[in-house]
Length: 238
Image 1 (spheres, rainbow, N blue to C red):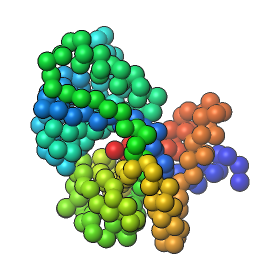
Image 2: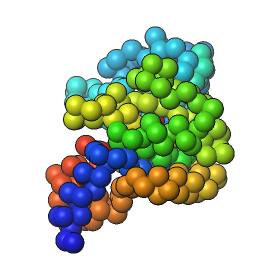
Image 3: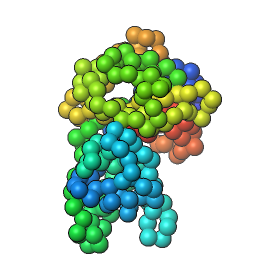
Image 4: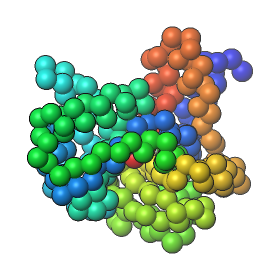
């Protein structure tokens, strides 16, 4: 099997079954304080202060010239606590940008920023059979379509580990609903949890995406095919 055939096989496997991927490198920033919602409203093109705890919303950040700077999903964990996610390469720049505005433009806002990228690991579970895998991994969590809705966020025990589970995508680019289940867990416990997830996928005879293929394509400068292998099949984890 050559590389091209492997990429097509992985794409078909996730679209027809389920795939998982370690997305822990995506940036995560804790935003806390009485004015956290107002602060995020000023930074994103959309409104974040109207989110209720336990909900998430996709957001885009623009620079002063109106060009897109970064994007990600914002989770509201409590009235005064948000987690803003960023792209992998943009995590440091976004945090610096936030701090710059907070300290020089809006010092009156009651907000604290903390990078937690290395404190939380992320595993994305995606595909038409991802709901079956999540139900087996988290029996105490109701993952039904009507209960665990689009952009929902829950804290649950997944594979024996306390984690945050979100559903930031309602469907894939095909007609069949392919819910994505990004799991966030403390980094020190992530290895054990990911191993349980992987064993569960194998036991159920569901295909697992090999992210090494995406890396190989990027190394060869074949970004378009890498996007086909990864972004069409694996959702952004929250």
